[in-house]
Length: 108
Image (cartoon, rainbow, N blue to C red):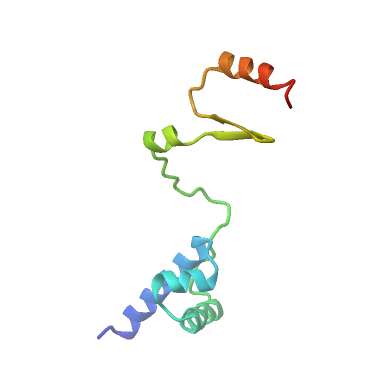
């Protein structure tokens, strides 16, 4: 069984984590499988005691960038003009697209 001090430190960490998560109370609690009233209780307790350092909202956060070639191959845009649909994927031939649009222009 956790000591009272361990329990407080556990909740202090959870409150900090919630504050920087950017999530709503409900979303955070759903993710962590805790009750909102528990989070609210500890937030209020630490706020009154001043025992959780305020979290700066002007801080850098880590950003993970994936090099996902498969997604790149399937991404693109689809131009729809009336019944005509032109699909443009990354790496398309600009000259060919321009030529196709010149041919299609009078029809549209």
